[in-house]
Length: 65
Image 1: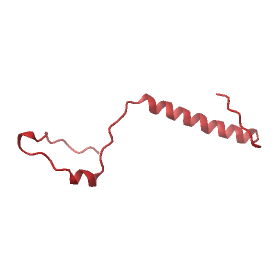
Image 2 (image 1 turned 30 degrees about the vertical axis):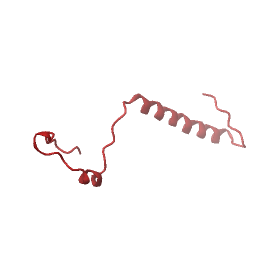
Image 3 (image 1 turned 180 degrees about the vertical axis):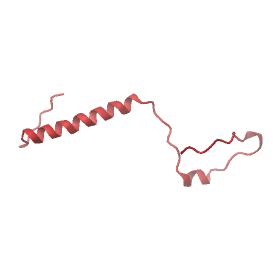
Image 4 (image 1 turned 135 degrees about the horizontal axis):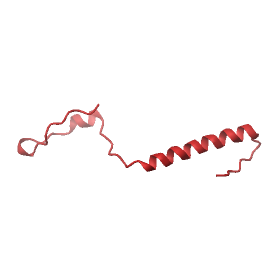
């Protein structure tokens, strides 16, 4: 990656900008390498969800931390 930085940025400013951009690109690449996760609903949403009963009830699992 060889970005061109213009607008009066000196060598140190340009180096700082490139370092930040490089870090962002690395984080983005690492995030793409992870499989997507299903977001867990907030507590106030979970409280309003009615739980099934009888034989259709799912097994009781411990809360995740």
